[in-house]
Each structure stands twice: as structure tokens, then as C-alpha cells.
Amino acid sequence: MQSLHTWRRCDALRYTLVPISAVFAARTDVYLAGLTSYRDPEPYTDEWVIGFAQAAEQAAQTGVRLARDAAALGDQLLQRLVEHRRRRGTSPALARRDAVVMKILADLSTHPVLTTESAATRYGVSAVAAHRALTELADAGILGRSKKHKGKIVCCKADAHLGLTALAERANRVGVGDTDRR
Image (cartoon, rainbow, N blue to C red; front, side, top):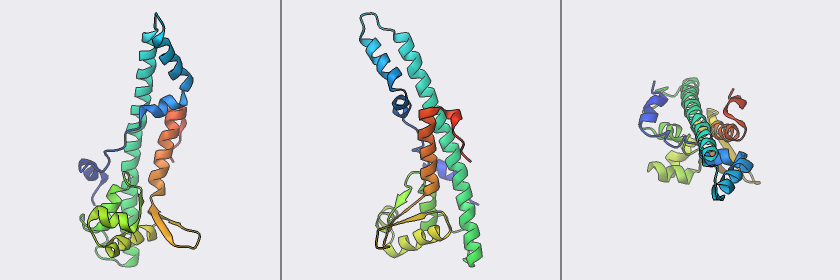
């Protein structure tokens, strides 16, 4: 079974870095005090550099944790897709690596919201092939569907991946050890 480690080598998880600005946004008083102090005739640069380094470390820890969690989630979702295909009698249960459904699954951490049109364009396939892949992922419980008020599907979204991102943002606001990723 193809793992997320392969996808990581293919650069699918490249954008799991969490910006340091998210840490500073949670500590605006410290951030602004550091900037203000820097402009003083005798700035407290040591404290500012230490605070900046601590914020960078927190953002890096969150990024590492996010990448690890995204890889584990990807492995779980791949297994869910295989199980779904087995239940439906789809052969092979593990789709080819170059199948549209596998490409979409591999990219969910960097592209968690898709439309049929955006998937068709991104993967160079017909709208029918893109729709079929998105429908299979939705039927497997991997993607959720967002609808307009009249019931027409607007987009498909990877709620689990979006949830990981929200947890990472929260971790930067309140501290890495203060979020539970279960």
C-alpha cells in the first residue's frame, strides 16, 4: 500500500509550515512591546531576540506536529478508501497511483477544497473523471460536500485536513501542548 511517506517525497506535504505571525498574533502585547523597545535609545534587544526565537520554536514545533498528523491522517484516509472500494466490489481495491482519486487524496493536505472544475484543471482530466473521483472520495467519507441553498453541490472539502489546520492555528495561539489532536 502506498504510504504518505511516498507522497511527502513527492512534495505533497510541502506546505505544512505554520507562520510565526500566528504565534505573534496571540501575543500582540509582547510583540508590540518588543518593537517599541527596539526603537528606544537603549533598546532591550536581548529580550526581543529571545522572544522571537521562542515564537519561532513554537511555530516550528507546531509545523512538525502538523506534518506528522497530516501524514497519519493521509494513511488513515487511504485505508478508508481501500475499505470503501472493497465493500463496493471495486477492483482493484487500491487504485493505481496515477488514478485521479489517488492524486486528489495525495493533495488534500495542500488543496483541501475542490470543485469538479478545479480538480479537472489541476489534474488534467475531464470534468466527468474529476466528478467521479470527488464522488468516490465523498462516498467513502473522506470529503464533505458543501451545497447551495437549493441543494446544488458547490464544492467538496477535506474537513479532517481543515480541522488539523485549525488545531495548528489554535496551538500557536495557546501553546503546542494545549491542544488535543484525537
